[in-house]
Length: 442
Ligand code: UGA
Image 1: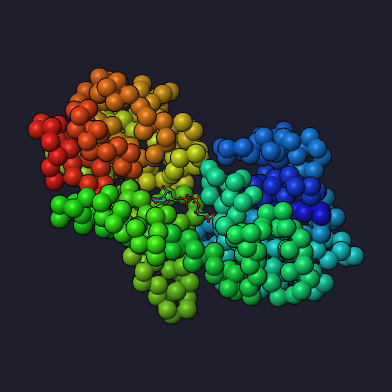
Image 2: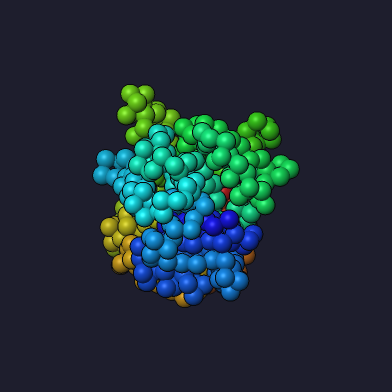
C-alpha cells in the first residue's frame, strides 16, 4: 500500500517506519526542511532505541521516503495518516490548528482521481475526526486510529501492540485498516473497531486512567509516610489482587512527558465544555504537580530552608528512562525550585542532558554518573535509568561531601542504604538516617 504520514514526531516517524518495515511504500511529510534532510539520512531527530537502524534499512530498500512536498506526498497515497501535534493552548484546550491545516492541504493538494482513506492518528478531542471529515472532499473516507506507543519502547509497542483501536463509519475504511494492521495483530492482540467518537475517547480515557493510577499511588505513598506504613508493602498487598494489577503503580515524583500532562488537561477541558466537570482528572493533575513541589521541598527542608552554597547533583533529567525527552519532566520543576533557593545544580543523564540545559540554562552538565556526584552536598534521583541502580554506592559515598540521597524513583531498598551508610530519602518509605544507621520515620 502507498502510505503517507503527515508529521514526523514520535508517532508519525515510528508508525511510518514500522509500516515500511513490513513492505509498504511509505512517504513522510513534514514542513521542516532541515528535519527532512536529517531523516533522509536515516537519522532520527530524537533518541528511540532501534528506530534509526530500522529507518536506515527501509530507506536502503527504497520503501521509506521523506519530503516537504505536499504534491509528492499526497498524489499517490492510498492512505494518509494525520500525525501532527496537538499542543495545549492558552486556556488548557487542545490546539487543533495543525490537524485542520493538514485536512485543508489534503483537500487542496490531492489528485481528483484518487480517494485515499484519511486516518486521524493525532490525539484529538471527541468530535474532531468528524470535523476533519467536513474539510476533505466527499470522495475520501475517514477513520480515527489512536496510538498507544510509549517513548523508549515505541518500536516494540507498535510491532506487538496490546490492541489496535480503530474508529470507522464505512466498510471500506474497515477493510483498509484490517489489511494495514494484519502483520501486527493476532492472537491476544485484537484489532478493535468502534464508532469514531468512541475510538477518540478510548485514547484519552486510557491515558487518563494510567495517570490516575500514578497519582493515586503517590497519594497513598504520602499517607504511608505520615502513618508509619511502607508503600512497598502496601503496594505488594494491593497488587496481589488481580483486579488492581501492578502496572503504572510505582510511586515517585509523578508523571511527565508530552502525553499524560497534556491529555489530563484536555479531558478537564472536554468536561468543562460539556458542562460535566471531570473531578477525578482535576485531582489527578493537581496531585501530580503537588508531588514535584513536595519532593523539592523535602530537599529544601533537609537543609533548613536555604540552599545557598549547596551543590546538588542530579541523576536523570529525562521524564523517564530510555528517552532524551524532557517535555514536562518533573526534574525541570525540581531543579528550578532548588536553584530558586540558592542551590548550584549539576546534572547527568545518559541521553537528555542537552535537551534539559535548554529548559534550565543554569544547570552544569557532567559526562558521567560518578563525575556529577564529586563534591556535591546531595544526590537527587529524578529518572530511574537502570545503570543508576547498579552503581557502586561506596564510590558515590566517597565522592559526595555528605552521604545524602533523595531518591524520587525508589531505586534502592532501605536495608542496602542503611548498610552503605547513607541518609536516604525515598517516596512513601521510612527515611534512612545516617546518624543512627537505623530507619526512622520523618
Ligand atoms: C504514554 C502512554 O503510556 C502510551 O500508551 C501513549 O501512547 C503515550 O503516552 C501517548 O499518548 O502518546 P509515554 O508518555 O511515552 O506513554 O510514557 P509512559 O511510559 O506512559 O510514562 C509516563 C510518565 O509516567 C513518566 O514520567 C513515568 O516516569 C511516569 N510513571 C509511569 C510513573 O511515575 N509511575 C509508573 O508506575 C509508571
